[in-house]
Image (cartoon, rainbow, N blue to C red):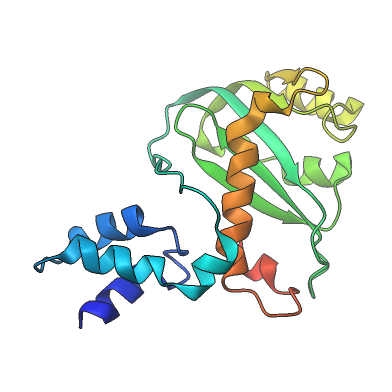
Length: 196
């Protein structure tokens, strides 16, 4: 039963192969047995799927589920080109509240400003005072400036050739892609089904 419990908190899609610390937190919240942490660590370290995809120490921070009424600073970014899915999606647009580190991802068929504008519903978590993005033409377009002005959002960009401004979001992209890669088919055309 121990291996079944560990597997259910590490291997399934809702747990996303997040590593031994996260699996330990989840299992410990409902179960207890002697040498539990050692069993969880051994099982996670022997996970073939994790061994193939992960390198280096895991990020131990987890996003908070609490949202302030006003988001002071949020960032928006796109994940580089992926395999075109059966539904026609090729990109992932990500939004992150810099205070709580809560990420949100939306599948897109392209990265045009018009497409991004159609899914620009970021204010559902509260009013945003500032929105940070890189200097991609889709984020610096006249349309995006007008939308931000309409929503009273101060639109700001990263400095030139300095992606470290949104380093945590870029790192989140890597974690996100690794999590999804555990579950997609070999032709990689189903990744957009796992994004939600």
